Amino acid sequence: MLAIRRLDKSFVLRRGAIPARVLAGIDLDIGKGELFCLLGASGCGKTTLLNILAGFETPTHGDLRLDGAPITRAGRDRVVFFQNADAALFPWLTAEENVAFGLRIAGVPP
Image 1 (cartoon, one colour):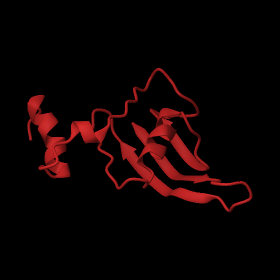
Image 2 (image 1 turned 120 degrees about the vertical axis):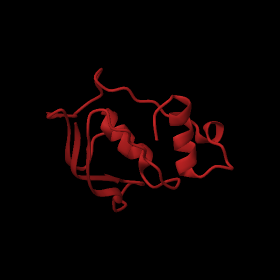
Image 3 (image 1 turned 180 degrees about the vertical axis):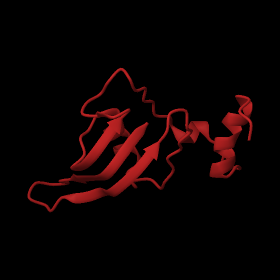
């Protein structure tokens, strides 16, 4: 199980500036074998969250655990990939229909 508790991430965008909070108070549990899809507008923090879950970045605050062990760095127990949505989505389908399409092709029941 992946457990995320009170996750925050802030960045200093320029020297001397007040840190910009890009993730705030994220709590999430994802069970083994569950399908999870992260959707959101450009710049909302999706990639930042995925980079933290992969161990590529550290959160400003919060706790991340995979099967009870803290995630503190990248590890062989996780596979991460990013896909260019422009080349992967059907623009005439809704977000839900785009996600369902791949599952249907793979034979996953609705």
